[in-house]
Length: 424
Image (cartoon, one colour):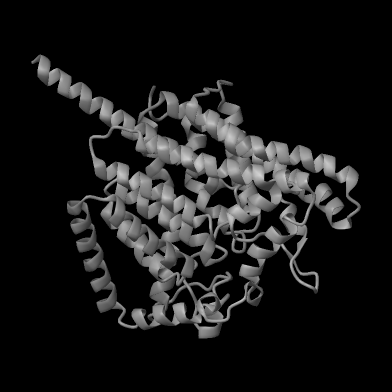
């Protein structure tokens, strides 16, 4: 199949525009516009061919099917519950979540079908997604960084002064994303994909923007990823990696000598790390503990099947009836909304991904290691980025498959070439 065709344009558009889905403060309604555009284009060009393989079967059964079960259970619950909040949720928020889940299901099946038959588009998709991150989020984020040194930069309204930054009197790099916790998962996606594609300049560029997002979650994830690399890599890979990291850190310190003291201030400002901390001391930690407590004080069926997709919006988290829409944690959101069944299915899906990549025979152990780090990154970023029905999460499900196909194809080509040499 020809790599570039009119039928692949919707795929390229979807992957390139995915980063704008987290820019709803600067660009209101942009997420629904890009989603509808991608969906309509894919439906228009679709051949109505669904290719089910072992990978898509696991994604459908362990990710999309539990959401369907939770939705059906919500329909059952509306008959039994006598709760104004739940009626409002069922009327206004559940339909929207169903639309999003069905849209991403259709997009997943459309892209998956092309990935099966078109080997050329796989690398192009990775490049497209990375360039979308660089151009939509990275460039303006770097401009904001330069703005801290006196260079004029447009002032955009984002949540750049939330949490510890407000106490320290500083502004974080958010680019045009609504807040840093929305920005940094994309940046880390781009960094890991760029390293896989051997695009060093892009990975370093995105890493600089990431460092000055001043995101505690990002810093913790970098530390854990570094430790994971140390555990999984060979001695030679460790030497090369830590040499590069050392050079990058040295450059950052020389260019921005105040960065170390700022990082220490950020860590010290976290209430979670201070003695005597209680989960009720911050809204972020309260919104992790409270829904779990509420769920396990419910009836047995609700514990297993949840309160319904997007029902988190009507979970009261404090005595003054403050309403929160998310815990900023996929595991907690999915546990409360989809119950133990959805939560366990997500864990089983993660285990399947890990075993799938681990079982591959590869010609380059570094590539396999990077894909494993990408899987760890998905698991870690899910602790501070919540929405499982989103462009990015759908893309992550597809990128894991792309990595799998690329590694398998590279090994098959290398094995074939060895056989040719033996015949000669």
